[in-house]
Amino acid sequence: MSEQEPPVESSLNEIERSDKEYVFGTWSYQNEVSPTQVVDADGVRFTTADGNEYIDFSSQLMCSNLGHSADAVVDAIAEQVRETAYVAPSYTTEARSELGKKLAEVTPGDLSKTFFSTSGTEAVEAAIKIARFYTGKQKIISRYRSYHGATYGSISVTGDPRRLMAEPGIPGTIKAPDPYAYGSTLDPMESVEYIDEMLELEGDTVAAILVEPIVGSNGILVPPEEYLPRLKEVAHKHDALLICDEVMAGFGRTGEWFGCDVFDVEPDIMTMAKGLTGAYQPLGATIVNSDIAAHFEENMFCHGHTYAGHPAAVAAGLATIETYQQENLIERASEIGEYLGDRIDDLAEKHPSVGDTRGVGLFRGIELSKHPEKRVPFGAREDKIDTGTTVVDEVSATAGEHGTYVANMINTLIIAPPLTITEDEIDEAIEAIDAGLDVSDRAMDA
Ligand SMILES: Cc1ncc(COP(=O)(O)O)c(C=O)c1O
Image (cartoon, rainbow, N blue to C red; front, side, top):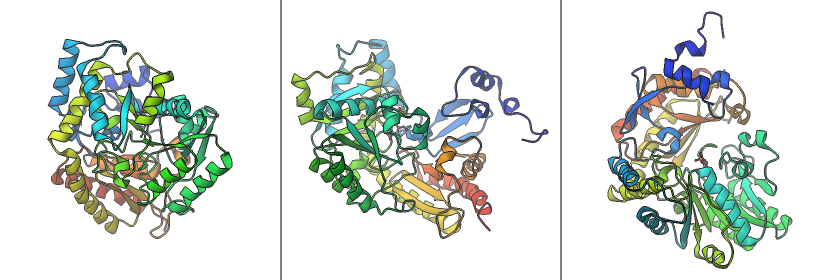
């Protein structure tokens, strides 16, 4: 930074400055944190304290699936809190009972019994423990390009560089390669056979394979159609369970209820959070099939939280799912997702720095490249834990200057708007990203 440039603090208002002083910014070097105060949010837009308005093209952290003005959910929360703000998990409420039943309905096949928690990472922690209790085996195979949460079990099965500072993590975690045609030397289908061989070589010690059916924060990686069915086959051949982490891909994001529905695969255990309440309340859920549920009739379900099935959170979950159903938002995401895909194709045609585009429904990624024909990323995996900004950050920042918030992870813009977005709003956001991509075009290798 030159001497003339003001320090970050001077551009912050009083609330932002105080927040920076007293509250940790997540996953950040604290001297680089620059919190922006949001003062209003409505539909697919939000407004910051300086009066700027943004289209929320990433649903905040890929979680505000209903946008920011779902009155039915707000009312359900308010009503529940007025009636009964909290009961211990050994009691129940109408909403908890109904939401359990509803999840058995909307999740595929035989998935039928749910444990409620308050976040995605807790949903994954529960899945790991359940798989270990049920199979009596300890090891969990997950993949390198994955994120499963920040708590110790979940960060240990996470593959992305955020795990490195937490290592060695919990024992018994093994990483496998990913189905990533654009960025890996391994063909996606070869990567499943690699996992088959891993399971063979590990002997009968693997409890489960844990995957995001469509990888989210590590770059929106969509496997070939045959990948997930084959992965389930491989897992079951070796008496291991298949756990699908649907925390980001679930609840309409892909134009189906869940990412695994895109491939017609029913996992043994599924984890959910984010879109489960459209982020109106913190809620995680881990649902298991009836065999696993039955196991715990005679074996202790040795797990729980004070806020397991918190009344306000499950009331929000129930109202959110009812809203998806009443407003046909899942089907809508599939339809308008086609339009979004076409508009992203337009950007790819125009901008040589677009290396690859991937995705389904309203879950799309634009991966950048310094070279028009081969993959030369602007952002490396290490940048996730290194200091400073990348060209990909500058692309997002420029889109922001043009009125659109778009998140990025490592080398990929993560496009995941609320399921309620209109074509006009998509056009507006695409225009802003168009301006952002001029920045990466200019930064390409000569
Ligand atoms: C696939 C996946 N699993 C788990 C998590 C962790 O969820 P949370 O941040 O709610 O703990 C995330 C968060 O982004 C995620 O994307």
